Image 1: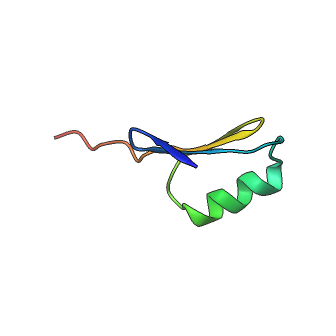
Image 2: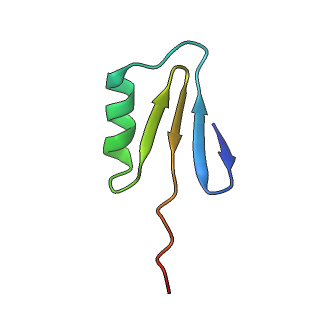
Length: 50
């Protein structure tokens, strides 16, 4: 796991599956979570406009 600015990036040795994506989404409600093969990214919440 690493961080790229405010995003959390999880890299696996093999591809993740939909079940893995759903598990991470359940752990981070309200956050945008994406899956790209062997990478799951938890994106930061958008900053509110002032």
